[in-house]
Length: 234
Image 1: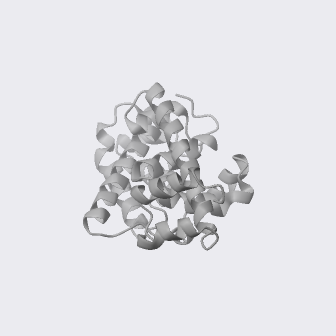
Image 2 (image 1 turned 90 degrees about the horizontal axis):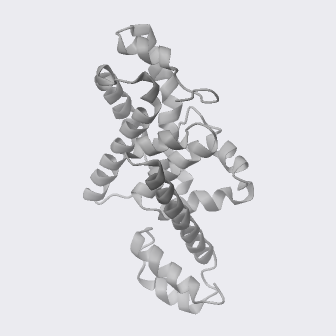
Image 3 (image 1 turned 180 degrees about the vertical axis):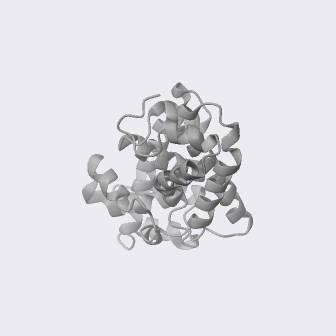
C-alpha cells in the first residue's frame, strides 16, 4: 500500500514499535495522534469526550500492536480501532440520554491538526459554506458522521479508498456505496439547516416545529426534509 503523500507513521516505525522499541512506539503514537483526532473530533462533533476516546484508541493500539501482522496496514487498522471506539462512545451517550455537542463546540476541540477543517473545505470548494456544513453534521447518524470524517481524510489525501474500506471492514465497492449514501444524507441535512435558518418565514414549518425540542434526530431530519421538498417557500 502506498505511503507516498500520506502523513503519519511509516512501515519502519510500525515494525520497530511492534518489535518492542520504546522510542519507536513513542514516535508511532505521536505521529498517529493528529489522524485519530481528526476522525474522533469530527465524528463526535466536539463533544467533551473526544480526548477520552482518543486516549482509549491509542491505548488499544499499544495493547494490540503485537498482533498486527502487516505493518503496511497500520493506518487502516488504526482507523478501524478509532471507528469502533467512536461507536462505543455514541452508544454509551445515547444510553445515558446525552447528546453530542453542537457545531460551535466542534471548533474548540484541541485538534493537533487544527487547520484540518479549513484545508478540507478549501479543497472541497466549500469555503463559503463552512458554517453550514459544520452545522449539517449534527443531523447525520453516528455511522455517517464517522464515515464523513474518514471521507474528508480521503479527499485531503490522508487516506486512500482502500484504507477507508478496510477501516469500515467492507469491500471497496461497498465503501463506495456507503460514501454515496452518506453524501446524500449530508445534502439532506443541508436542506434542513437551510429551512431552520428561515424559521418565522413559513407558517407551515413553524407549526411543524412546534413539537420539536431543538435536538437534531433522524426522525426530525426526515420530517423537516419532507416538508422542504413540498414547500415552495422553504
